[in-house]
Length: 150
Image (cartoon, rainbow, N blue to C red):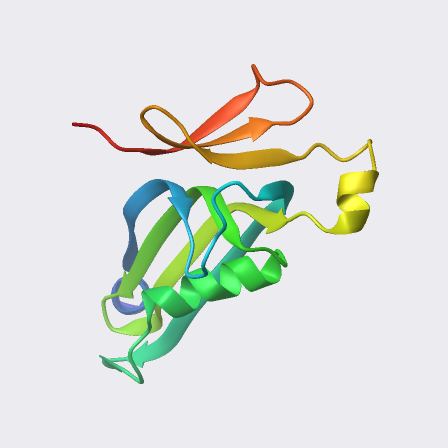
């Protein structure tokens, strides 16, 4: 009988603290800041950001996707994200509730970056089918970041 109570207690505990994380989407380019077409950019690092609140049967606040993207960009000290993933976490009864963002952070190149030949810089250009980041060292090396189809 004691084992049954322990088992039921563990099942209730597992149910209360479970939840799910749903992938909202994968984005080749996302930013909440103005970016300059024709500007020179460098990849800073892969970063994460989130805007979550705690949920205890109901959420204590409303998370915001823009805030999660802003925090990811700020954590990487940049201006835009590429190869980003946005997730939404929603517990059943108790736990964190909100958005998480992960992506490669790109920052606008400074004058010092332009003078340093060791830093690989990319030009954000409008190409034939959309936006692309093209390496200044090797024009064949490019990253398609936004596709505009017809």
